[in-house]
Image 1 (tube, helix red, strand yellow):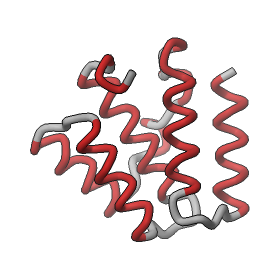
Image 2: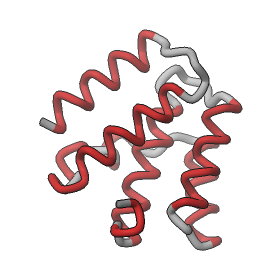
Image 3: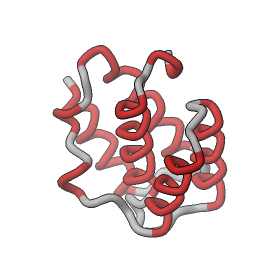
Amino acid sequence: MLKKLDREERMRLMKFVCSFAWADLEVQDEERTFVKRMMRRLDLDESDQKQVQAWLQVPPPPEEVDPSQVPPEHRKLFLETVRGLVAADKVVDPEERENLALFEQLLR
């Protein structure tokens, strides 16, 4: 399913993933590892990888992370990927739990 995403959708997915990595205001090593694996799985080019790395330094602007922009056919994939990121450090903070629940509601 990941391979079916076009470049714009791949970058949108990574923007969401990075924004969730920032939910507790700190990006954990396990979350960075998850992001690196996702970049490989998505086969991002060097330029896109640099952009994703930048989002791990400074989160994407909230107005650019709008669940209504996720195409209906990709919502399940986005949700599963974000859940994977949230679980990556084996600690789900209240902020992460709340953001994930809100994301699920907005994607319905």
